[in-house]
Amino acid sequence: MQPTHRAYQASDRGACIALFETNVPHFFCEGEQQDFTEFLDVAASRYLVVLDGGALLACGGFTLSRDAQVASLCWGMVRRDHQRQGLGALLLRLRLQAIALSTSVRSVRLTTSQHSQGFFERHGFEVQFLRPDGFAPGLDEVEMKLEATGISQQCRTSLKDHAKAGSAALGSPS
Image 1 (cartoon, helix red, strand yellow):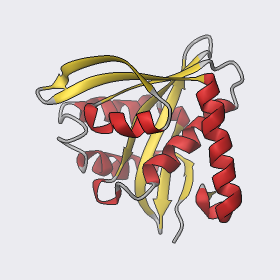
Image 2 (cartoon, rainbow, N blue to C red):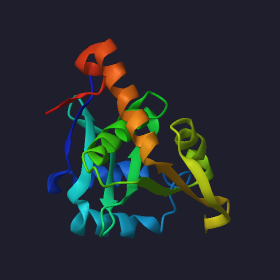
Image 3 (cartoon, rainbow, N blue to C red):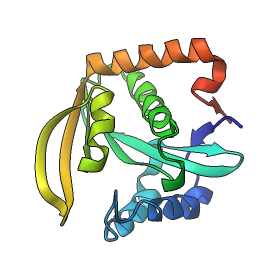
Image 4 (cartoon, one colour):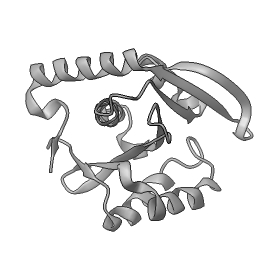
C-alpha cells in the first residue's frame, strides 16, 4: 500500500498519542506528552496525519508567526517501528509544501533533539543553537532554521520526485 495523508481530525487523537508513546524516551520526554495532548486539543489547525492501510504512521504540523513570516514545524513524528522508510521525508515535504503556499514566509524554524538533527540537516536546515541536555539528561535541544530559498528547493525536489514516481511519491490525499 501507498501512504495517504489528510488533515488531523479529533478522532485521530488516540492514535497520535499512541504514536507519540512509541518515541519516548529516545525522541521525546515522558513529560512532553501532556503538552502534545494539549496541542492536539487546542491548536492542531495545521496538523497532518500520514496513514497506510488505515494505520496512522506519522503526524506533524506547523504554526505561523503573527506576521506570517516565520513558520515553525511542530510535533512531527513517525511511529518508531516505521522510521527510516521515507515517511519522515514525506511528512516534511508535505508540511513545506503547505508552508510554501504562504508567500510571506521567509524561514522555517524547528526545535528538535540531536537524534533528529542529521535528518533535518540533510533537508537543508542549519543549526542555530544547541543546548546540551536542554530537554532532559541525554536529550539535547537543537534549534534549526531553513531559509525561504530552501523551502522552494525542497518543494521543487518534491515535485521532481512526484513526477518520476507518479502520485505515490508524495502519497495521495484521502
